Length: 199
Ligand code: ATP
Image 1: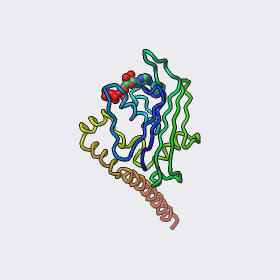
Image 2: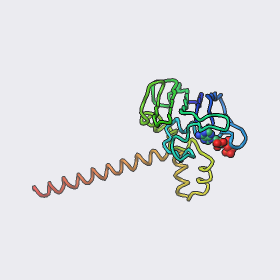
Image 3: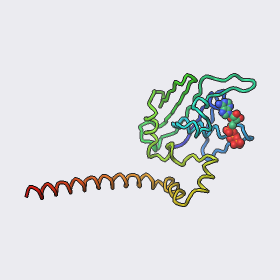
Image 4: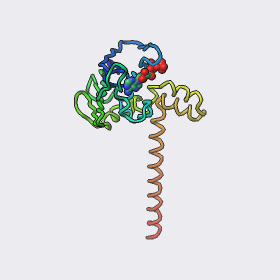
């Protein structure tokens, strides 16, 4: 799966519609301090379902809407559209191209779409579940997070490496299965007790 394009309009410093085409290979974004490099990464996280305004360096979600500059009025709507080439079906859907759009109005009204169809946030989250691209994954690491990882306790750092290596998902499955097994064992014990009583 490849990231193909990102369209940003009315999101943070991107007042006017801006389209970024990601070519094969590595893409680097360069620019002076405060020119909006981090805002591009935040646009990606936002369209993929980020729910924390703080995680996007704001107080409330409406802070992502372009708030105006000395020579430009604030806008009432932020929209980000991300397009993935899914011809390898890395994301488990029949679509070979997936376009996700998120729109937020100052009134608080918000909308998510997958390939033009309005969906729930949950549908977006489920699409990325187990792909290593989810909101809590480490596929996007912000500046502050790098420091956090370096200064984390060894056990926490290990959790990061396990998540990246894809082990974390299996650990969670194992914990779930162990809990279920323990529930079954309790039921078996109960059956043994009943058998003992009626003998
Ligand atoms: P650095 O290199 O210092 O990390 P950067 O290129 O990553 O900077 P960003 O942090 O992405 O820059 O962008 C910060 C700019 O975005 C600031 O000028 C800020 O005023 C602007 N900005 C953030 N939110 C909004 C908003 N809602 N409306 C208008 N501008 C905004």
